[in-house]
Length: 179
Image (cartoon, rainbow, N blue to C red; front, side, top):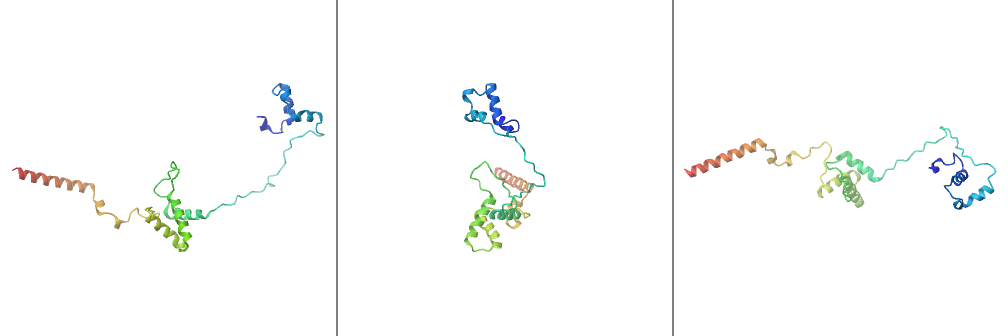
């Protein structure tokens, strides 16, 4: 804990002197400079003087904002598509988020240089869709009504009614055969 006091409560010499007196440091183990300092002490005793600074004299250091080019791409992604349906799986070291895949694909398409910036964002979404990554725009329905299978519109009650009617029809045909 002596190091935490710095030079406020005595000098290094007085601390070492007191440690030697108390027996913590043996006279054989005293530092080399101790005898020199004891023989030739400084003209003025070293004092710890804290520099005086007024609050107005301190300059406010501004930390510059750091933006990378991919930050703009990510901002556009999250504005258009939201955070997505899947949570980030941080337990896997090789997990790549949908946003990162989007950024990688965006950079790849941008390196080809065939598209302008306005259509590049849309084409990146289409390219990911071709790879099997489905992106859903914010506020859009999860699946368009035209693409839904009509079987999915059946209700459970209707399905049970159909099964029961089919079951009664088969029992009637088996009774007719037995008679």
